[in-house]
Length: 166
Image (tube, rainbow, N blue to C red; front, top):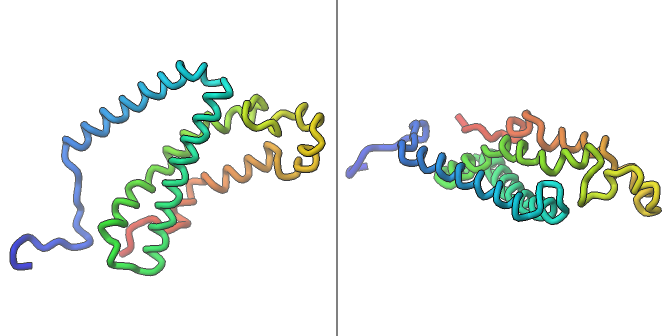
């Protein structure tokens, strides 16, 4: 490059202090908004709050998983054209551990049998509903737990080769 500093793929580029401060402020606003949502939504155990949280969580989870898939495909095909876009996708896909933590408001009611959304998590409801009895092999808390461990296991990002190619 004749007009500037040459940039290599192995350069360590870091964000400045302003971006860190912005991230902290955004986290604070998010926590305040979550608390207000819980209060306005009728509390953390109301059906409306549970349904709204589930929809919002699945939206963000779909984005994270889609970006993780995009990064995986770029690494598998050894695509060099997508380095700039891939870095952004890697940063956003790196939030999967946070999404695992944010899954707790959905998972805890299921495992305690007090879910407002999923009737199959309550054994007394399963006994009363003929359709749920036939689906009990798939819709039960133990099998749901196994699926959650597979989906959210700490080794999942490493299996998907989300690290930088060397």
